[in-house]
Image (cartoon, rainbow, N blue to C red; front, side, top):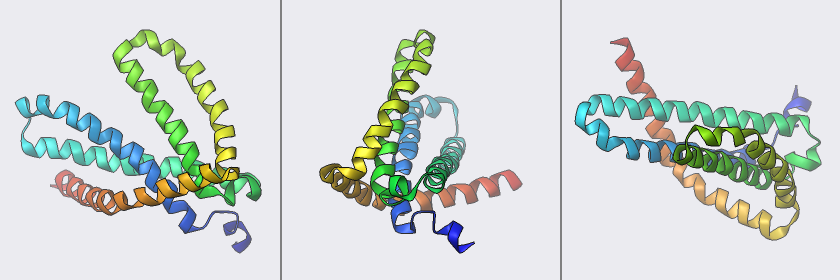
Length: 179
């Protein structure tokens, strides 16, 4: 059992990557919430608006954990020299590149409409193909490694706000759905 656990990165390497994932997932939710809030104020009560936010925050936690699980599975399956040793730097570059690309795609999709949907396979193919060299170089090139570690360490501070807010949201949703 211990030999299997050694294949995973240390918690000190996992936490910064989780923080970057949370920045993207929670950031998207806050952006969409702020965009929809003026319309919601016209026909929803404050409790309904806060419930919408609570559902979004709870979903963001699940989404962030799912994305982190995919990265941890890759670290477990790939040789240690490729992903485990520089998990924080390479994971940060993968997350920034892939999630940034997904957010950019949906931004273009929302402004261009369904006609842009035909490019999703090309977009994701280019993103995945380009993200692997970026992740590799992120662990090998000193400036890329240091910048990823610097950025991911700074983003950890957001977890002190996001995780308690999410826990309060989950508790409120449990109380709301039980009563």
